Every structure is written in structure tokens, then in C-alpha cells.
Length: 132
Image (cartoon, rainbow, N blue to C red; front, side):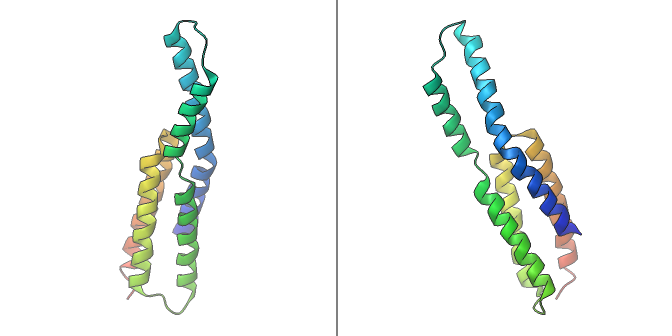
């Protein structure tokens, strides 16, 4: 099922997101040491820079909303109210969330997962056009 594929993709993104910040911190520390030529690294300043990056790239809210949209979509399909308009609206919202995740994710692995989710959303949109 396409929704299940999207759910699995979102889980991969959710698990990957914290690693992005840790990897950024490591790369930044290495780069600063390289540029500083052996000078003492200011740990507080490094932590501040990492915190700014983590805040700017935080996709937790988008992931939670996407999970909510998936649950609403499933509930709508199970109900007798499976209107094409409501389904189309949910698909638009899901597309917005995944686009935001893609722009904020700042990671190649997350970008690949975003492409997978967008592909599945496109297929769902095609199917939804057949619902009146």
C-alpha cells in the first residue's frame, strides 16, 4: 500500500534526522581544527553553532504533521465519506510537509527519502483523481 510505503519512508527520515546534527558537529569541529592550525577549539562556540544549525534544520514538527496526515488519510479511506476533495486536500498538505522536510533536511539520505515519498504521493494523487 502506498501509504505504508510513505509511513516507512517517514520513519527512516525520523531516525536519520538526529544523526545529521551529530555528523554536522563532527565535520564542523574537524574543519575548525584544520583551519585553526592547532589552536585551542572554543567548545562553547562550537556548541552554539551546532545548536543554531540544529534549530534551523529541525524537521520534527513536519514529521509529526506528516504522520497525522497519513492517519487522517487512512481514516478517510475507511469511512463512507471518501470524498475526492478531502483526499486531494490531504495530499496537498502531505506534499507541503515533505517539501519542507526536503528543504530543511540538509542531508543526502533524507533527500533520497523525500524523493521516494514524493513519488508515492504522486501515485496516490493519480489514484485519488479517480475518486469522486
